Image (tube, rainbow, N blue to C red):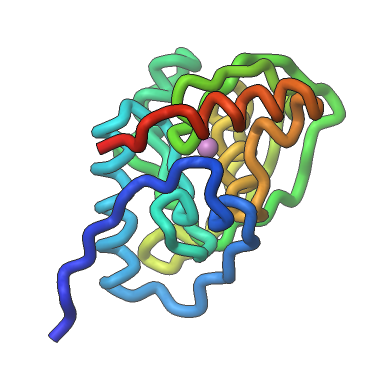
Length: 179
Ligand code: CO
């Protein structure tokens, strides 16, 4: 019998956030439980996206609050609130980029403007193991790009220059751990 896992949010500085996650080999019910728990943690902290390493699991899995993002992007609401993305691969990137302020649940209180490709096309597996393609722009593209970075051990302050990065880390170190 398996013991009930309790996942918690990983806060920077933490070496887990700087490691490359492994590919998911098999989509099990255990994995689906992790995705559901990730959705609940994301909701608890008002996030719109969360990657598995942010809950201490180095597997290539992401959860996106597609409904909240669709409202923000003013596009039709999806059938399902959460978009579950497993083993994503970016297969096309637009040359055009855009700037927008970003935050991250693993870096509370830190917000910086990040330049990212405006549009992407990804290939991924959903939680049923179906291979799908998705074209994204707007906040959805940005969010997916941010979360895929997490799977590659990259966080958004890696884009902002050494001084801002240092400031962010020292601010996070001073903060009390979150409950
Ligand atoms: Co993040």
